[in-house]
Each structure stands twice: as structure tokens, then as C-alpha cells.
Length: 393
Image (cartoon, rainbow, N blue to C red; front, side):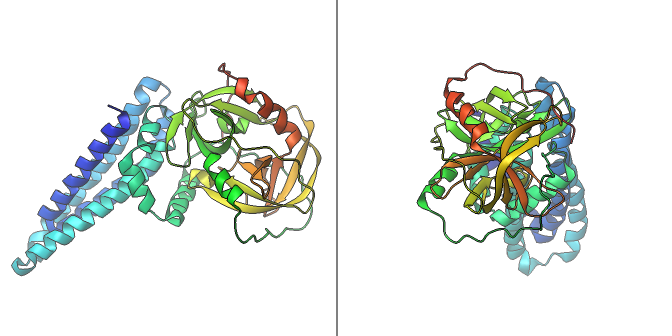
């Protein structure tokens, strides 16, 4: 039986348990228990990634992660439930008993489902090869996730990124002009919509640095995903999540810290490779696809401010070399590193890799002179390579 099916069975039993518990406890009792559950869930949302990063031994990592979540949730539920039992007898009314119970059951299952969604995202973001794919592929989790508005998911992802160390995003200060305006683009071509299916989320844990790392990538050849080297630096087994929510463990088969490019081999990945285009000229409009803060997929407009050679160090800040890069008027955020820069025909014309912290609305992407050679050999890359060492964020 697939692990994702086991997860589904356990989650269905859990939610049914909350329906029964909420019905038995009534509205007041349920609200008190839920308040404790929410408190435990919020604590677990932030602490689970930290515990996962602190445990270096793979054989103990999953157990430690699940134990942390269970202790915090059950502890909060127990405290809240005790308070509810104290309060409910004073508030109970015989003529409202059925209504009280029905509302209690409804509130309990809705909040429990919300907590499941939060924890699924938090645990999934760890990039644990067995656990993360099972959770991401769970039908129950994906059903709950589909009912959660994207703005809520984006807010939670951004909030988590403020608290949990997620590696260090690349920052370049190569722009000295005025703050540009991000272009406004109305409508999306069919080619750009089709390309979204090949843009993937990449997560993993760099245990040597005790941190989670997230980024974006895209299919460059059958079963091969191109991303930034700094996204997978120090990550032995990155997890790649498809647009449909399916997650698979990957293997780093190419790692170039100088060019900041890496290729991940992913067995069973059936998303179509994106085609390659030519470098865009200054003033051209483009689209940047990715997963800001490790949250839901987003696509945003970009305008080429400049495309020119620039001296840039490797992902560790050493060995500066000249390479052709785009300067973009775009809202680039952490988690979008490794995502494609696309032209209006849905062709790859660059790879997003950095942003400015001095000038708002400025991002950077590698031009095609860096991307094309790697894309040409991606399909033939099969052997695992060392993914370098991580950088503490």
C-alpha cells in the first residue's frame, strides 16, 4: 500500500474523530479544545521545520518531526479540552443541546482540517524524501489545500519564512538607477499557461547548516529539472513538487557553483520540457514563474532593464567571473530562485537567480549563454554528484 494512502486513511480517521468529539463536546467544549489545538498547531507549524533541521540522522528525522507535531497538538488539545469541560456545564441548555452539538462537530472538523493543511505544508517543506512526497501526494491533503485560498497560503508561507531559516537567497547590488515600475500585463497566452505545468517547487534540508531551503525549477529535459545551485547547496536529497501537487525525491546530477546552476534527476516526472528561446532585448516584456517563500505558484510580469555582462561571484561569494545577466524590473522574492524567465511564447530566455535589497523591484536572471550548454547535456546526466556545501542563512 502506498504511504500516501496510509496518510489518507489516518487523516480520514482523524477528521472523523474530531466530528465525533465535537458532537459530544458541543460548541463551548469544542471551542475550548480547538483553541488549544490551534495554539499547538501554530507552535508545530514553526517548530517542526526547526526540529527536522536539528536532527542530522536520517533514521530519526521523520520520527522526531512527527513526535514534535503530535506532542504539541495533543498537549494543546488536552489543555483546551479540560478548560471546555469546566465551562460547558454552566453554559449548557437542554433545548439547545442538538444545535450545540451540531455546531460543535462542524467547528471541530473545519479547524482540524485547517491545522492538517498548515502542518502538511510545514512538514512537506522539510524535503524529507519519504515523508514529504507522501504528504504532498495525499488525496485528503490536496483536497483541503484546494479549498484554501491562495492568498491565505501565500501569507502563511511568508510568515513561516520570517521565522524559519530557509537558507540564504542570492543578493546582487549591480543596479544604480531609479526604482523601476513593474510592468502591468493583462492576459496570459496559451503558451505561458501551458508552461506553468513544467515549473516546479524544490525543497530540501541542509542538515550541516540546520536549515530548510526552498526554490523553484523547471523541466529542461525528460526527467530533468534545472534550478539554481544555491537552492540545493548542501541538500543531499531534494524533493521536487509538481504543479499537480505530486512530490518526488530527486538526485542532484549536475552542480556548478560558479554559474549557479544545478540539474536534478527525478524518476517518474512526466511534465513536458520547456523550449528554449533567444536572449531578450532591453525593454522587452517577460514573465517570471516560481514559488515565492515556498508557497503557492505565482506568475509575475517582468521588463528587461538591461542585459549585459557583469562580474558576479560564485554562490559562496568567491571566484568572481563575468557572465551575461538580465537586470529585471520585477517583484522577485525568496523561493523564486531557479524559476524560468519566459518570453510571451512560453520559451525559456533566462533563469532567475537573485534580487536587489537596495533597490525595490529589481531582480536578476542568468542569460542564455549560461543556460543553453547545461540544457544541451541535461538528458544525458545520470550520475549523482556532490551538491557542494550549504551557506548559513
